[in-house]
Image (cartoon, rainbow, N blue to C red; front, side, top):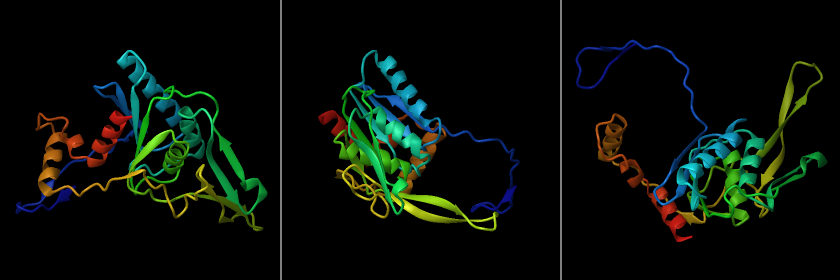
Length: 245
């Protein structure tokens, strides 16, 4: 591959090798104050087990139950519906997780939490932004409306529709229609509305100098491994709220 770059009179040639890229749906880190940081990048068929495994790992590292948990759902585009239901249920003992209302009777459903809270009532703060959508909004809405978590960030995307494929007579094609919408436990439609945070914090755009610092961090050129977090005002506020619980 050849590219042109400012400051170079000749083209730059690179040899690239294609390889599969495996992105973990869940990442975690135990904080110094016995609180956990859980980042859910997407919701797939393994995410529920990954979340439970990461929480168990942090509890083992802490040597005792977690003092609190920060769940980062920012820029999470969603994923499987069942995964969202099961993950929300991990932190809820009672209450509605989400409901669907539609034009057909079978589309009207209500999903309820089962007894048991993996954190045994420890406080939770959820981070969302305009890139949080679909399954991420189901989890954030369930924890917020059941007063199980404080939500911090900016209003989420607002993707909460249920779509159905209706086969056509030719046997080769189908019509895709929106047949229902998702509603939070408080009865608010996610579609076109999104989840409104309890604490609204707008993430400022990074200056060019800060971007360069983060690039250097990624390249291992800086000794301050916490600088990225320091530049994240939403994360800072979420951590403060968790400490105040």
